[in-house]
Image (cartoon, rainbow, N blue to C red; front, side, top):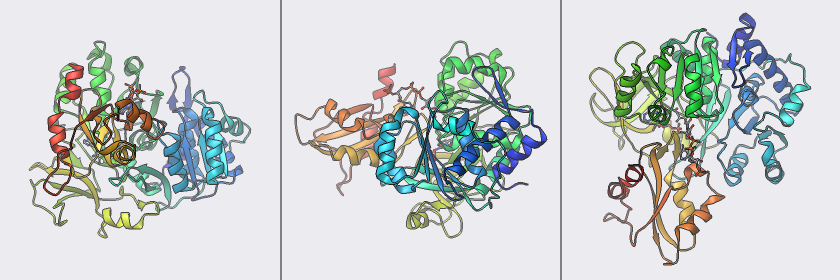
Length: 508
Ligand code: MLC
Ligand code: AMP
């Protein structure tokens, strides 16, 4: 078994050069061989720009062929891939570039002026551009390079990627994933979900997170399957593509949106063998409605940036609504007392901890934070609360961390509250997630003002340039006083209960 993704990809390109790798929107197909050659051109360009093994390559670019292939090119030369959400503002990008100190930043051609200034200020030595149309200095530079390129022989324990995940303190942490983490999880998933070279995966997820980048792409490569690449989730385009694919992966919002389309029928998905959901809870209601409409039981799995995938419902056997299935082969899962860390008996609700070859190496330059969350024993403390039933099925029942998951994107209230509290006129704020029919949860800010003239508009304007759109509160509510317990701590539970129907009534 190969212990890194790139050599597996290279093998595929050698043994089945004409096998399709990427089916594109314009009807063309890129074979494994063609994709491999393009990673060679991009790799040569990175090398020419001075990137060395272990250097970070940061990227904020729209989804596209070259965007995806920069990931493989980065693995090829032993660089550390650092993908960034396309929704991040320049203020957010500043933090990531400053923290990770990449050797090269690949950004959108449209952001040239702003990013050139930022890189000059932060001392990022090299930049390349990649526009939504695929043009820019990356494409020009790579076109001029030869395809043959050496591959760095990465050790399974070497870093392959850093993915930033926000924290309860509001400060983002870079999760360091190794080549071994990625390869082991992909091999497990390809086997567990029965991927073969005849599969075609519908890929409408973003490629800057674990789900779209690793779960979808790495599993495909390990099995030698093909990807039908869509730039984003668009229900109409997904409906058009479904008859030509065998597997789809998505966040729950994808599935609730499909169910609201009358054209989404049993007949349309006759060719599909598997629908996978993850990144956020899939409601039992959606699971059941999907089965009634299509005859398919969605397979729900559970993962994290720090661990790739941990559990999955079975391929054969019951896919239980509301459960995330069994620990994957080779991955141990225990439920512990959140206070003491002691393991709890089967059937108890407690902290989910996982251990296995999937678990990351730690947080970038944060040894203390790493020690807090990654035990000496190798168990990672997920921050999710769950239980294991008598049959071994795991259910997630809550979160020990203050976290909102909105359409599959994580929003940490602490980050938003810090910015809100700094706005003149705000006494204090509480950011909560409320049930949302489309996004699962919607972000709401409850504000106690000290200036009676403070308006919603002023708050919205103050946040605009600082926070990615998906993190910005969809509603801002004012209260004369925030509810507190006897210790003076804001009672978010009370706020969540009080405003529980806010979005549900809006959409009724
Ligand atoms: C878009 N918007 C969001 C949003 N996505 N707001 C909150 N949460 C989101 N997730 C904003 C847009 O900027 C826009 O703002 C408005 O909401 C409406 O946009 P839309 O057109 O309705 O949304 P759309 O672009 O269709 O995006 C929704 C989505 C997308 C669900 C398709 O968010 C998505 O692809 N999510 C997948 C996230 C994902 O891959 N997560 C995996 C993390 S890995 P306005 O006001 O400007 O119009 C992980 C580990 C694991 O968690 O287990 O997998
Ligand atoms: P991220 O920071 O994007 O890695 O988010 C990981 C978090 O998403 C996990 O810790 C869970 O809280 C949540 N998550 C992922 N998959 C599921 C799922 N199937 N059901 C419920 N929550 C999930």
